[in-house]
Length: 278
Length: 290
Image (cartoon, rainbow over all chains, first blue to last red; front, top):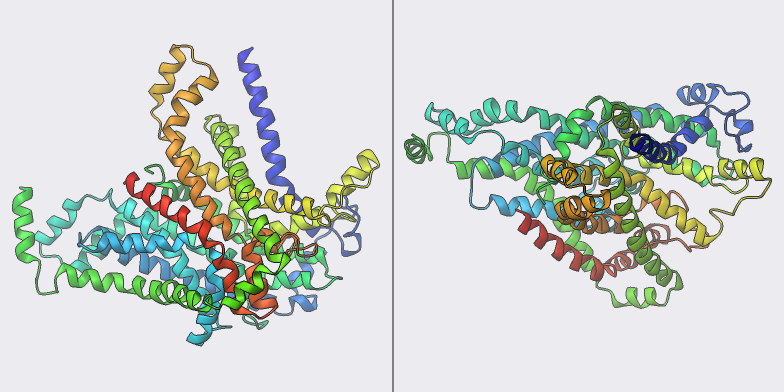
């Protein structure tokens, strides 16, 4: 009896969780399958579902989508460049901070985490001006550098936590054998922290691919913007084709979701490592 | 053995390829450069931009500013605490080991993995009072015209809070779940043997163990939520009649829609009296945690 009650209680919670989580996503997919003329019907399922919106999106069948492929390319470029830079910067920095045992290392690490104590939208305004001073506004690198600055502290922190599980004796014995610092970094440190590199690489990719505010502020011309900025343009006109926008939005949302779920095992253990200590 | 290795290491330290200290600097420089150019300098520059007294005079005479400051406070108190309480509850649900609950967990993580913009636009269209899904269902089931969701400021702000929770709940549930997983299982077994009720188990075992994590999460989430731009901007755009702005969207509105960058910076600087004390408490807590 107690077992039945328990299952019932869990079932009710699960049902609420699934409806709450799934409704906006279901609604997005449902709208994307709704013909443009039926967008205002408020239906639970369209009368004549079709893939027409997807065909339009992929063939750039609307003025809003004139540069869709370039914008998708921009999103990909920003995500890959951010990911690559974060991996390099965080690997070298975490190695220097965690493995070389230098006196000033903890200070650098604390300084890095300070980045997260500034609300993201607050830094945006001065950073916009500063990007102008650097001469890279409306250039994808402005967005990439900003994203690298926001992703790196967390990446360094995760790698340091993970790096603590690599025995220091390995470095010691390599040194006895005459290994140089770069050799230790390349042949010992990087292979052993590889699983958490997958996690932080994915984290950086998702952060960059999903970013809206900084992309919206820093990038302006149609051929430079990323996909979410283009999607944001849809709301500026009253007769915007919402069903077409939703189809484009689904196409844009699929890669990060697929990536996230394919490396989920690495993510959960990799990214929550150390959070328990506090 | 260990001491002889250390001795060798000290001898070798300033070897042919440079000392550890030199390598340390070389390896950490890329990050320090990014930090200096993208974080430190803009903060200093922002502080300089925010020193014009007339910006503040303008702000404090702007009714939209006062409304936004109040909204920000309401947002932080309600959205953050509600989100963390639900996360605390759900972390208990996901602690169960049944396979089907793991599947629910996989779906539950979707809002966190998916980009914000499409989901928030979907919510926005869903709650359109004329042709959205929600009012469509209400009409078909009960024959009533549903509420003017995004037209009434109170309802619109409620939806902003719900959207923020929808997006961020999975992350905090995961963090609190990790906290629960770290509690030794034998404590629960002992409590079961003693016939403790579910409430007693939570009160005397679970909560004391994750209390610190819960408080740290609340503080961190407060700071991050101050900077939540998307939940407001993409759902209501600050409307109707600028009634749902928070300081982050109002700052962006001043700086970019109106083109008054100093006032935009001043808007967000006025949130610092709330943010800075939280940052101090948080840093102290994190340091004690180590």
